[in-house]
Amino acid sequence: MEEVQEEVKKVKVFRLLDLPFVIFRKVLHEFEFFTVLNLTYVSKKTKQQVRLCALNAKDVELYLTKDYERVFNVVYKGIKCSWGNIETKNAEAEGAVTRPLDDKIFKPVCSQILFILHKKSVDTFRFDRSITEDDVTEYYGMVEEVKDIYIGSEFVTTDELTLIFKKFKKLENFYVEPEVPRDFKGLEHRKLDVLYLESTRSMMLPSLGKFESNILLMENSRMELWELNVFIKNWIKSTPRVNEPSVIRIFGMQIDASILREIQIYPWNPKHRSSSYVVWLNNGIMSIDCSEGHDIYRKSDGMMATVLLIDNTFNFFIWTQRFHKIPHGSIMC
Figure (tube, rainbow, N blue to C red):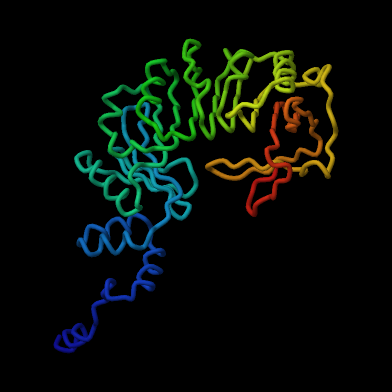
């Protein structure tokens, strides 16, 4: 017994905070995010030390589910960690982890995470149900400066959309699954980086020419081919706008050459532009092969655009820069 006690005395306690900061940071980066968060509750000194390490989380999201639960997600080192008042379960995404959290400490934990990640707001605010001004007010402290909003509910109202653009002044990327009400015109002349509309069955030609988002992505459109033909002709005759989409992609269309009827088109010339058009999205970089695209020119300023009809998709790319360098790690399309 005495020998065992003597051996225990010889064991030295490993003091993490006694490590040089560079070593501490390397050790911290080996931990999963749950462990990192737990460390911040040991002491104020540990909390500040962790914050100084400038951890890089790919995405931080507040998610209001259709079952009226709320979940806080952090993607760290490719693994999604979740906090919310839900049962522990296997998430659909590979490598995802979910843990239960008492409802009473949800907001304090979220605030702690944002603090150590040097974020005033989450990156993404997603909701799969209707929201009210009370919902926004309740979580405004963590979503005030959000840049990405994703609406995954079955329906969305004009009042909800008006509320979003009233409250979130720094919104850059807007993703909408349900059909946008016809009486809502707030998406037209709205400068966004990315506007994704999954259901655009009621979209008409006049609306297409009024968008000002840099990247416009649309699905499930009932737009006729003649309408796209008129859109291209109108663009050729138009004068430059301060804000106009540089990328328009409409997916799921039955396309054919009639879109280009009575339009002067030119084949790809390697001296005039690069073969691929690079599209920067918040979840990755796409390099789209435009070597089979049809080039057109705007009469007023000579601006070049490419119409690419492939894989049941209408693509319209404006070449504000004629030659694009393909970044390492981009997705080739």
